Image 1 (tube, rainbow, N blue to C red):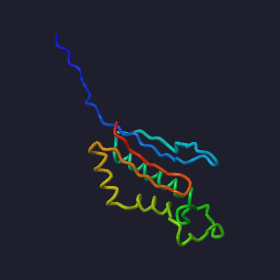
Image 2 (cartoon, helix red, strand yellow; image 1 turned 180 degrees about the vertical axis):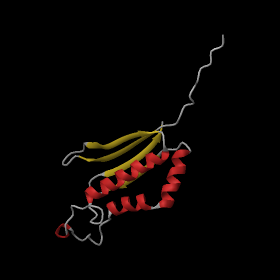
Image 3 (tube, helix red, strand yellow; image 1 turned 90 degrees about the vertical axis):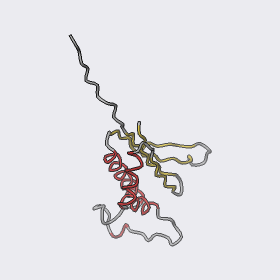
Image 4 (cartoon, rainbow, N blue to C red; image 1 turned 45 degrees about the horizontal axis):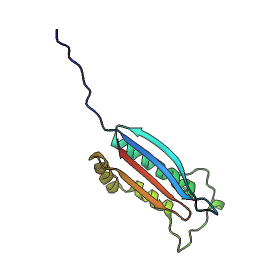
Length: 131
């Protein structure tokens, strides 16, 4: 009697993570906050989740009145001319289709992807790591 075993080939899975890291006020201690973790076997879903986290962070730092229904006109303040608009950088990264295609090819080929956006008091890191 012959017994065949169905062996499912190993699939690559992806661990996605959103972090905020910065120094604790008044000390030299570094604080790390996990803003979300997601596991998937799809590079498309990994990038979709990363994009959602990028928009989520951007909207908490600087709400976009076109996307956030709760923002009222009196809440809007102009961005200082010399200030770097990090929420706009996150939104631009998410909306750039060519960049998204390149990121998809990068992680699909087995490479990790890191998007690091430094802000005034901390750095936001979005990552996808093949496992």
